[in-house]
Image 1 (cartoon, rainbow, N blue to C red):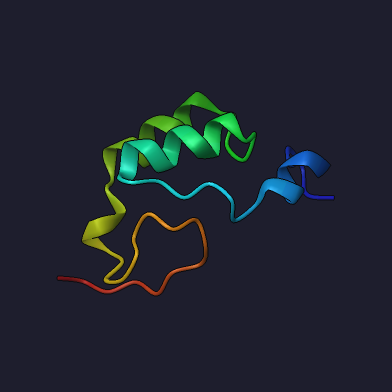
Image 2: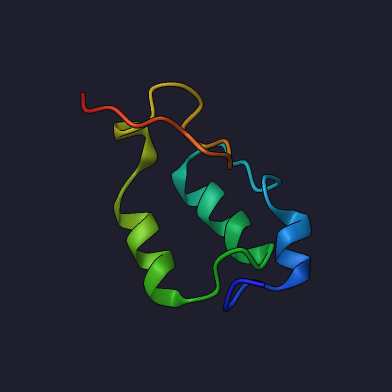
Length: 67
């Protein structure tokens, strides 16, 4: 198992969609996917809408592009 990833977090993966970046990050945190406050701050500072053309707040792998 990956370090720092609980089995519960694995079951919750891809169930943390949000209506915007802050909502998605909050759900990732409440579902135990991210637990380190440094990661929370980094994810809040960089909005995925600038890098993911379609459905940026869907918690799943996304292709990246530069606008």
